[in-house]
Length: 358
Ligand SMILES: [Zn+2]
Ligand SMILES: [Zn+2]
Image 1: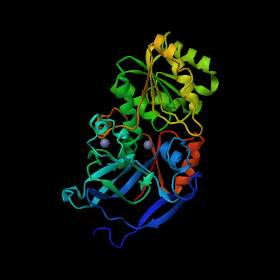
Image 2: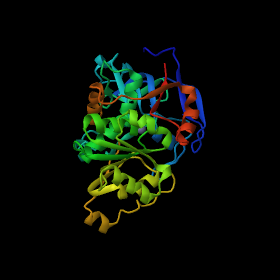
Image 3: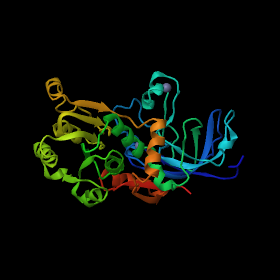
């Protein structure tokens, strides 16, 4: 086969629970029935990778195994196909996502709730992910990448982009509505600002560390609030002032911070919707303020959204292709993954980091 005699460089989580990364040579796998082998050139680095590497999500049933290959925003060309897969896929550029495969036929798959499929596999958690040069994928679940799109900027749309795309769709954001985005300067947030402004024609209150104000404003945020400067009550007041009185129509929580969740309900106007996207790390607690009397009398909604479906990924790529979102990336070598995770932990990253796997 095409890959013979070549090596597969991979970054593995050497000691899950820490950010220790080892770069190793692995065997190039052979595609089985229904699979394709992809020679990856790029992979985005998502906060979820850090959470898996550090065993930070207490809700996951099993700890991450040592030497797990992480990663779930991978792009490259198909180099071989398994039995029963159309060999015309060879040479096509495709993307590999957080969900690596689903059954495609359960009630959740059919309702576009792919992440709730009971038979799903996850890229970079018990299934080798995209922090490697050669990666297997389900032929019917890879995402074709539009020709006019560079791989490094398309990669972050495969998780960060389509996740916020799906969340904004579930919130049914209407033109001129106010969307508050905690974590607005991050990988998800910076794309959410642009989709709200350019695709939904809404208005954005970006909430993040003050160092990200210029970045968020450049992307179109109408207002910026440095969360470090406010108590919970002051932050709610500031959001109300920015919206001319009643508060945000939608709060899209893109951070993995419990504090952002605890503040979110207070930022909403009556009838407003809070969309839960980021997953807090460490010990989890119920979201503050989500009590029956308040939710009932203020007619608020709490909505969950986990990544997005195959169809929503295609919609997100098409929107970005029309210029509705520009991905801000820094391209770094695979060997830098440990450093990237440490910067991510400290909240230092702006936009998305993408690994060059060529
Ligand atoms: Zn992700
Ligand atoms: Zn299913």
